[in-house]
Image (cartoon, rainbow, N blue to C red; front, top):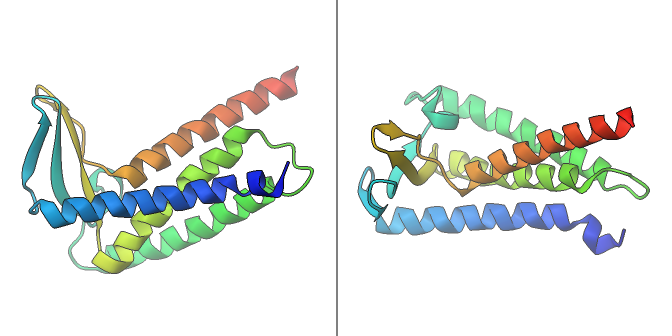
Length: 166
């Protein structure tokens, strides 16, 4: 594997973090907090929410204590994911691409949300999907990347399990 290709998951992580920050900055500059901007009526809207908790608003807090703990936890996750990604890219590693790119997606998404936690003491969420009375919690590009990365990591586990059993 060429040196450039080995580092593509880190490039992917950077692009995700940058794209996440750019989309959040766009929403923060053009949408008021809790303002709803319909995009596809009855299905999708943009809404500016500052989430001080974790996924889907769980552990939401205004005291700052939760944010501090989540920031430290996020830094630990970034370090662990970076270490795993670095190990998967060493020369001669036979890791499947789903591992490297899954880790790259998680790394980029975690970095994007960590930036918000440090600078704004909460994460900007703005993608809001709903169908009738069913409403999915608002999320952002970083959250979508983390979810995609988790899916790739699960796929990797399944592929490696099948490879070992053959």
